[in-house]
Structures are given as structure tokens and as C-alpha cells.
Image (cartoon, rainbow, N blue to C red; front, top):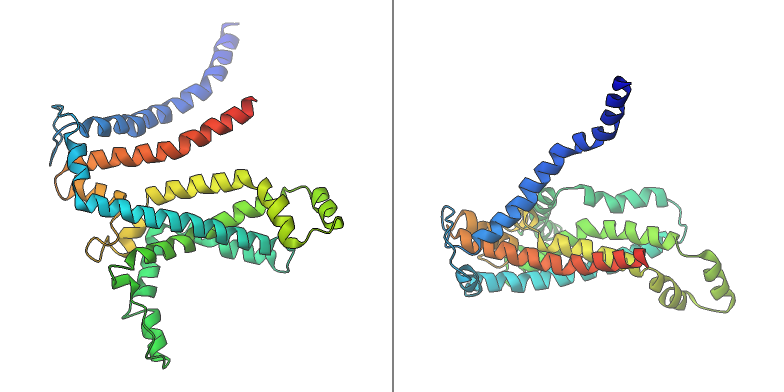
Length: 295
């Protein structure tokens, strides 16, 4: 009887015992370090942490940094173009693939494969491709098009757009997969009824299909916004933040001020700003999802 009771207790407690180490690790290394970073942002930490509170001094110094304003301006350009082009291109590819064309099974992984490549590999590959001395410019000139120039990678005014190109190349296939799954879930009876009533293809998608894809649009926006804000390795691999600080983003600013410029409190303050931005995007989404499920 005792053996049976012990066995039953073990069966009930086994999932909790298995999950306990990972749960403790997440609490410590994710939420614990978040709280630690928030605390450091209210200190005057420089090379090493100090724990004497200094109010909002780090935040005041953060917003006085020209590099931070450059990073904020760049994330606005990169984020808006990256999200808009990925969603538009992903939706277009999904609509084309949804026409039951031959070779769909081959084309889907071709478009989706870039998402399996890390940002480091993507940035390195596009760095070679866009390098005026190695990539597309040199190739075109070698083919006889001596007038062809494409120096965005080393042009301070255009370098941020090379980040957009590489990011869109990697994430548009992911958006395509999301929209294709959404399109396959649209009620075919409604589509047939609209076609019988004389609705054209454009009107069909604008008035029936796309409105039903609202949850997919929202999910794609949340995922892409999150990826844009935390982009770091793509920038480092592609431009290293340069030329100068032309491609500085909040993530690269946070790393450089925390670990190379000995301004740990300012770096922590920038990290808190990034965290608040992500929360401002994700929390309303989670609230709306939970509200719909409870309704």
C-alpha cells in the first residue's frame, strides 16, 4: 500500500520535478537579469556595476547622446520598411502560391529556407554580395556595364537600406508561410458564392480574403517588430554599425556603451527602453488574444 502510494506521488510529482531546474534557470537568467538591468539603469555604473542609486541620471545622459538619436532614427527607418515590405511581399507570394501552380511543393521550401539561416550567415553573405569590390557592382562592370554602380554598403546615407534588404530576404518567406496557411483556412464556399455573384479576383481578395487574414497580419507584425527591435547580429555581420555610425541601432548602441565604452548605466537604460518598446507591442496583442478566448 505504501509502495503504491509512493509510486502514485512520484507519478504526480515527476513532471514538476523535471520542469523545476529549467523553471529556476529561466527565473534566474531571464527575469532575474531583467530586474538587475533595470536596477543598474538607475545607478552610475561605468566599467563595473555599482549599486548606489542615482535616479534618472542614466536616462538623461542617454537622451543627450547623438548616437542614441541616430539609433532611434535608424530603427524607425529599418523597422517600418522591414515590416511593411516583408508583409507585402509575403502576402503576394502566398497569393501566387495559392493558385495551385505546379511545383508548389518545391517553391515553398525555397522561399522559406532563408529563415533557417542565422542572421550572422545572412549578413556575411549579403556583405560579400553588396561589396563594391567583390559583389554585384564588380560583376556587372566585368560584364561590360561600366556605368553600373551600387555602393550602398559604403554610402552613409544608404547603408541602413542594405540592412533592410538583407532582413527582408530572410523573413519574407516566413511571412509567406503564415499567409499561405491563412489563405488555406478561408471558407471556400464563401469564395465560390462571391464568384457566382460576379466578384472579380481583386475585389474577392480585398473584400473577403484579406479581412479574414487579420489575425495573420497581427501575428506577422508582432513577430517582425520583435525581430527588428532586437536585431544585432545582422547589423554587426553586414556593416558593423558603419560606415561611421550610419547603421547604428538601439541593440548595437546598448552593446557598445555597456561593454566597450564603459557606460554600463547608459547601456542598461537603453536596454530598458528597448524592453518597454517590445512590451508596448506584445502586451496589447496578448491582452486581445486572451480577451477573445475568454469571450
